[in-house]
Length: 361
Image 1: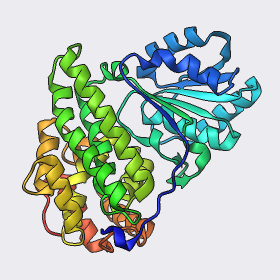
Image 2: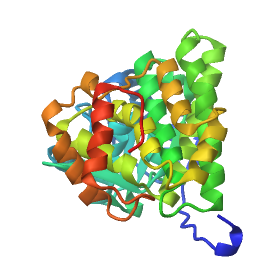
Image 3: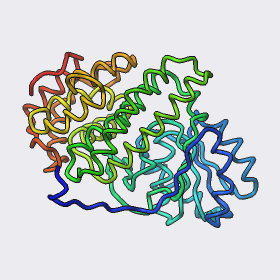
Image 4: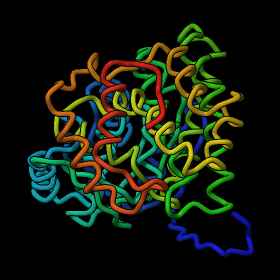
């Protein structure tokens, strides 16, 4: 895209802190926001960090929520909002992956409370105004109240991530970069951010999963992955999403399949689906990956990370592929560079279910 075509950026106010040990700055950030009564939401894997933070915040923590699951069920939003209201909370602090951030965002919107997010995975949603809630199906929306006022990226909090979660969470972030390059709001600024985010993730993720967990090499790689994650989320916030995220939300939200694993499997297949409709965007992906071809590069990276590469192994029922294709076509609308149709999308899902190499759809 040339600058002569013009573009728009809708920038929101958010304070971002990067660096190992920066979680220690959270109490000061909470004070700076004028918060005196916060609800602390944490995933089970982040309980240790949440416990330490709770001690630091002391009486400012008026309630804690530990039961956090993927895809943000409506019932959890309702119950957590009630907890916040009953406790007289004036803010929310989340510690954990996308599930904790997602629940915090939904409650922030519903209760009108400011949010401080401390991500411990590479979800990237902390950099966006997008939030999702799941009833029978997953529904997403945008609201400026969902954007955390402060985000603290501390690589030390990611060192406990298992190899598989590191891989799938990182590929989730990479999917934000890939789709931001051809989504409806893509522009020269988002192109730069998405390409650099993809490059950072492609370089850092293999080191993050292969280096000894407590080593300085691993910590540095995880910090670089968090930086790539922030760029991924920021570029997606501006550019929007298309077919890939639509498919992931349909599959994950309806059939409760792990969000990061769905991203990991589908990424090269959707890239292949859009290859002829978005050649310039996918050429940038290939360049960022250091690969001759974006599709091959994405599949090769997933295999190197030992991430799942087929839908069958992550628990998607075989008899729902027709429904997935039809619902995705209806949900994506005109947001994909190639208008999808159910038959071709069904062929994509067949290949992804079996784990066959991505083809021509």
